[in-house]
Amino acid sequence: MMSGHTDMVLVDKKGIRIDGRTADQHRQFKVEAGVLNNADGSAYVEIGKNKVLAAVYGPRECHPRHLQNPNKAIIQCKYNMQAFSVSDRKRPGPDRRSIEISKITAEALENVVLTELYPRASIDVYIEILQANAGTRCAGLTAASVALADAGIPMRDIVPACAAGKADGKVLLDLNKEEDNYGEADVPIAIVPSTDEIVLLQMDGNMTRKEFDKAISMAVGACHELYDIQKDALKRRYSTKKEEVEEDE
Ligand code: CDP
Image (cartoon, rainbow, N blue to C red; front, side, top):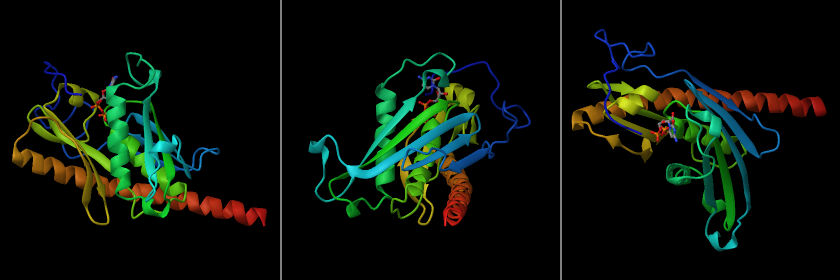
């Protein structure tokens, strides 16, 4: 959401951003897999102050039935911002923005989930934004792909997502709320790390081709770092699951 200009200094003379980061630093990443008992798969992600939960059900019978595809499963995604997730209370329920983010998230995930294994089924992904500070679509997609893996759904890879953009004339990695609101451009991307395919790319605002290339390369780099954290979360989850099974035996 780029809404215009401000007198606020977003990047100071030494190149330091308002949250203390340098241009090429991302916020802190945190990923946990399997945080909910009653979903088939789940994950919790923090990207800086963004806090996001994802839950997955399926593959299960697709409702409404007219959405069924005889050749593959469909992915139905619901991105939802909680009323308390933003500074001005968000009016509950879907709006144009959340419908758009749900759609692009499902489309990104369709590139990695082996949907052809489950004709007529639905895989349902719920993304709940608990706290927002710009970058929630990236945090949501990052969480959703870990939740799908946690549900044991066959996938080619998991999908990390991160944005880069431009504020105060500088190309910056992983924009925070002020940089997103008052900056010049924001480019969220998601990749398939094993092939470096881009499965989500959006752009809000303007930058030159050279700046764009720089933004993409910074965001791809951050996605690879995030990927390692996603995999660690799944490994931790798998080892606790194994311990639980062994205790039961
Ligand atoms: O969250 P993301 O960057 O993917 O999407 P955005 O539409 O560019 O929104 C940027 C940020 O604006 C969000 O992360 C929220 O912090 C804020 N926002 C808000 O305060 N109220 C809304 N209704 C929507 C967004």
